Structures are given as C-alpha cells and as structure tokens.
Image (cartoon, rainbow, N blue to C red; front, side, top):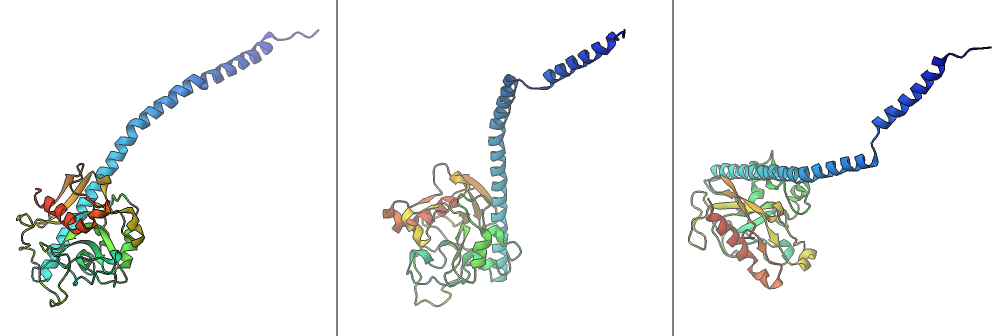
Amino acid sequence: MTMMNPGSTVQPMMGSLLTRGNRRHGAFTLSELLVVIGIIALLMGLLVPALASARASARKVVCLANLRQIGLAIHSYAGDNSGNIPFGPKAPPFLSPASFYPSTGAVTSLISLRSGDPVALGLLLREHLSRQPEVLFCPDPDQKISADAELAKVGTTQAQCSYYYRHASVTRLFDNRNAPDPPYNIALDNLGKNRNGWSVRALAIDTMFLPPPDLAGWNVKPHTHHRQRYANILFSDSHVASRSNEDGRFTVDVRNPSQLRNTFSKILEVLERADAEQ
C-alpha cells in the first residue's frame, strides 16, 4: 500500500489559495474603478482650464512680441526713408467691397492690393521683415487663417494681416485722384492729431471686425482675435500694451447693415481710443 505524502496535497492547495488571493488584491473592484475615474475627471476639470489659460497667456506674449517687432521694422523703414513711415500707393477707385482700400494714410489691415502691389505694413516685407514675415499675423486668431497663404498672395492679389495699421492722422475715406503720386509723406516724429485733437500714438492694433454675414460672398468676413477679450496695441515709440476688450471698445461691430457706411469711422474710433491708453 502506497502512503501519500500529506505535503504533496497541502502545497497545491496553498498555492491555489495564494494565487486567488493575489488576484483578489491586484484587481480593482467596480466601485474602486469608478472612484479612480471620478478623481481623474476632477483633476482634468481643474487642469484643463489652467492649461488653456497658460496657452492663451503664451499666445498673448507672442502677439505682443510680434507687434514690438513690427514697431522696430517701422522705425527702421523710417530711418531709410527720410523719417517717413510706410503708407503705400494711392487707393484705387472703390468698385467692390471685396477690394476696398481707404485713402493713403488711413487705417487698413491690407498688406497688398487686388493688383498685388504691397501697401501699408506689406511694404516692410521686402527688407525690414523679410526674415520674419509671420510677425504680421497674430498667433491667437478666432477664425482659421493661414499666414503662409496670405503672404503668398502679396505681389499677386489682395492679402491682409492680423493688425489694423494706421498710417497716420488722415481721415479722408478716398484719395483725391488728381493729386500727385505720392500725395504726401507721413513722418514718424510728426503723426499729427486725431479727430479728438489728441496726438496720434497708436500705430497698430489687433483687428476686431464683425461685418454683416451676407457679405461673406464678397470675402468680407469676421476677423477677430483673443476671443475679443483684449486687444494688443503698438504705439509710435515701439512700446506695446495689452488692454481689455470685455466691453467691446476695440471691436468694430457693423453686423447691422445700416452701420456699414460708418465702418471707416468706427475703425478710426478704435485707434483714437487706443491713443488715450498708456
């Protein structure tokens, strides 16, 4: 008769119990899993707004740096052009909302005309911003825009950048077609007075433009930045500042078609408000 070794039976049984015990302690129960998921969701809820705020702050800094670089380029351009800032060719006749360019010396976001001729800040691209043309575009647009695509249009057709550029204090909507070309020079150290009688100080600002929706077919579309919460400003001495736009004071809102005729005046108002900023 063969005698069984008690240990041979006990050891497999103990091994089986230990295995089941290890599995029990190494796995999550459904309740534990739900708790972990809840904690992760809570942490994400806390972190995502903080990360979004950090990204927005970073884009704000880059936008201000872009404007600062534009200001330095304007000063460099003036140094090469008898103290005059870039203003571009005379405005062509107004034939279509799709190609509107105001009087030379007025405010515009265009960097080239329908003909492809560079204007305003676009005049800086040949030399003074040739190595960093992307500074003409804010890194925080509210609408999808391709800086490369817009820059590729310069020399061929109409293109615009992210900033309203104010040539100076000229307030005429259209140029006098009988005036000699160029009609006048605009000196950096003598930019004149705005319509309120204050000295012109603000040279460029984030575009905040809201047109009527039915003008989209004419390529007149909204162009806003920073979710319209604030606007970044370039002053004539090349310093930059960021100012709140929570009240819409820097937004050109002409969504009501009856306000369209006042668009140019509203854009000037935005820059005149910026003149009063420090």
